[in-house]
Length: 224
Image 1: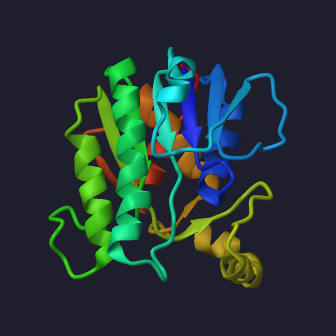
Image 2 (image 1 turned 90 degrees about the vertical axis):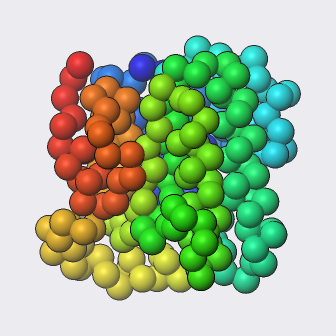
């Protein structure tokens, strides 16, 4: 398969990228970034694109892909709803609409969060916006779409977060990673990547995947 990934400068996106580059089931990976990853790999292609609210300028470069793993996201901390909506819903809608016009048979996966509000009417601002974003993707008409409602993710293979306090937490928690991995409601950066790949290879009836479902889907991994 050939996949597009966003958010590869972040912890989740980098984990998904690593698993895709290591997987024999993935032949090509296109990453869309504002600045270069400075990474070289035979499977890897990179597009530098500054305006994530409009992808028309690079539309021709997005042809021929089987899936998009949209791992890009921003924290709602300190943001008003209008601004958070613009960066969360607005960017995702622009990307999804562009890809749908190119290939409606694509699988579109979105990194959301546990507690996302599908009703779009709850008290938590971020949960409403994420819920609206999920609903937009699920109703767009792609061949398939999966919402990764992640919570605690254990970073593996040297991956770090761009957020300093998150890195501090993981540094303190590192001695307990082995124990944390055994809890079914936790997942790892590797499992997220494997589950992304397997969602395209095998599919699953559940379109809203929390950590436990992500771990189960990751275990289906095999060469196909």
